[in-house]
Image (cartoon, rainbow, N blue to C red; front, top):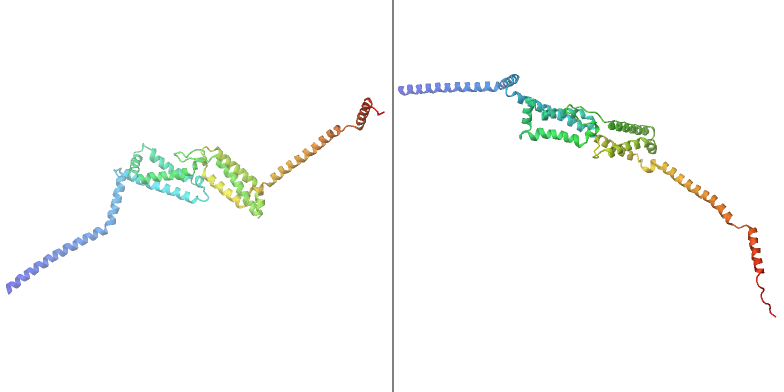
Length: 314
């Protein structure tokens, strides 16, 4: 019994030692794991510092980091332009109001597509226009250009935007905006002074016709009929405003019609009066005088006296 007890005690002691070793190693493992988990942000910071230091030293990852910055720039300029376009959708003034934002985007796009001397730009172009990224970067550029061209925004300026983003508003755009301002000022002034719509139609008829005549001239002069949509939308709004005040042709152009009708009627009356004065003397000259008529009667009686006498009955 004593031998068995000693053996059991030895076995138990061995189990306790093994269990202690296992427990110690387990606690050490959990402790190390906890340390790794808690130190994970530190590892991230160490990685950021390492990448930053390597970029400063010109490592192989540095060009791609520059491309990442270029991607951020493209995202920023396109979002700024699209926000400006959405905010100027009604009334539509995107072309003149968002030209600066569009110019910045165009400059970035041109540098990316045409700058072949900069190794970084060349690398970014190859990366952006690869099959994996083609549908994102390229289609973003196409979308911005299509949005600008679909509104014929180049028609508002003397020439298309250059690579440096420069632009100059055309003289036609300046003249149109001035005439549009005069028309709107006339309508606002007439509405504030009088509530009679007929008065507004009469007072603002001149500015309206002047604006409409100038716009129609732009349409005729345009080769393809594409006018800057800023002017198209403004002219459509002016037509709607003019129609909303019931300024139809019968209301604001009756006076010239009455003048023409009066002149025509007066000419007709003068014609008949003059014709009467001319025709009456002619009729008077055609009437034979009585003396001549009597002479003809005597001439007829004398001629009958020379005729042979009729035979008398015996």
